[in-house]
Length: 635
Image (tube, rainbow, N blue to C red):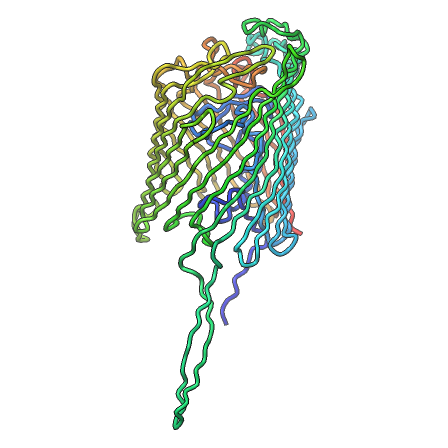
């Protein structure tokens, strides 16, 4: 008798929402390791450090340069991007058993709390329900420093039994509710530790807040043009001895199709961004350098509506590939309509400011040659709207080395990525109207060329990247958008590693940057994060104890300042921050499907060094003790 393979009933995979991507056609595995049990801050999830504002859940700005912003109309809110979940971030959880996960984190001494709940189950054959709720509440250590953010989303995934049709419907809502204090008035009060209670340190704003609601709904579905299997009819003749009659029999056999006509994808999405900035005392010295005040009380309001339709054909069919697809081809068209409203102080009402339509053509190909070389190409072109003529051309050459098991190169893969993009200014950079800022700009499109050579060998990943930008648009020292007339170049050497050596586990990254023109772009020359842990079985291996230490570091640089009234970071040349190690110490224990942890954050403050600024005039969060639990349930 053959051996029956056991199935892990606690294994949970998920599908991202985008049906039309070859790399997303196979399910992904959820990270359930104890090593990441104490990660509850959304800014800890990427290979970059963020400049932020003295509290979790506030505005943030990446310290690494990325030219990955998509072409076309921009609905993103960059300074809150890591806190907002839209249709591109949703997941469908797949599990043999109903799956739930609860994460709860609290602090000792104040009311800071973090709650996350995930749920997924099959409610009928082929029909899956997935849900997630996330909340971050932190009163903050400084005056007017509170954050109270949450998001919630739900989706239904349905697949027919023959897998010919699949549909996904979803809804999401994000709430960003943060107080804005404009930073502390006198940095020396903090660095000299003149006040032991940070709540009494003077801040620039005491009655300002930003409130945003990002919500939406939509559906997407695909249909395979041919059935997954084909029926073959076989005719046979049985000869009977001493008889001239030979009976004819027919049998049907079912076999998978080697070639299909691919599938048609359609998606519809609606999204609404509601942005509010409120300030009861508008005539403050903090705002004096900017535009003339229209009214003493600020009630800036911007509302953006988006309607999206997309049709795409691809050659994927029924195949599922997470990697090494032999051949893949797709082409499609998107139509989007946008409507922008804002509050008019002169009319004392909200009115429609602008409407935009755009059509984007897109297509791409993936080819696998000889099992070792993969060539990828993607293209997008805007053909309608004020951004007409914008394009994005991306390609990749991926080369694997060695097929033999004893060949050292079998674990080596080298990549070369190239991206050429023409990008017009966004609606925000072109025209804006508020109590403190007003502008109309006639900027022309910027051009980006990025080349990235990188390699992966076992647990090591390293590369060198260069981005050249012509006519770069940025926010200058006056907190207003401006355009650089000329070319700037950003060069980066980077690397990352993630591995387990005996009971030690480490994960980290580094980035070295050089900017050719420091008058228009400020980045730290070096930044890194390193986390090291040691796993020790206890209680006769019924549990695992795992202490860990995390170090974040970046060199001194003129980090961008933050303007609350615009929700935007902008250039400044007066304040240097950095050259300070941010150290967190954690202790986690794993018992079956539960992880419990305690963490002490920013412990380097114990040395008496208070130069721990994470943005100009915004000190890093104080040392705190966190208690948390991650509990996965299957029932």
